Length: 194
Image: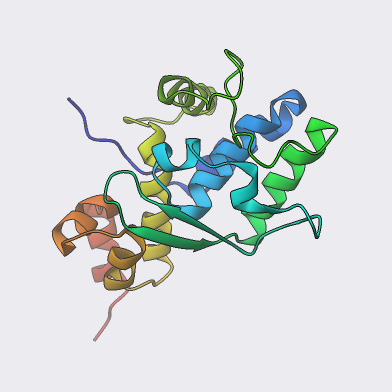
């Protein structure tokens, strides 16, 4: 069994992000990908989000933060919705043509009434985009979460802060999430000249 990988290459990541944006009828899938990449939430927690968790219906705007009780850990996790996540959600909301019910699932299944998108369907959505842009390695729903951490780490976020963001119980788990490879280590040596 291969390990889920982050999307390391910034150019491939951009292609992956834009895949569903270019397919105008698939704003839900675009929002799913961008929300996963920009919040580092587990797919199970994302699929259980309802519109009221992210959208202020009285003020007609997206909330600045989303708070979830993680299914896996039972811990509360509050995440800011950055501009990329809010823009993807806005695109998705515009595509609906009308405001959904506050209690409606953010990512509804097309099967059944008021049911969330299933994990296997979410996986197919991620795989379609990954395959279309030629991503190598084992890319899955969890890759969105790992991609967030990998790029945050590459941009200088301390691993201890990433451990807290992920709600991990040990640094060892966070280190594995970052997907550090030999070329990442080589880069450190090549850019240090003492």
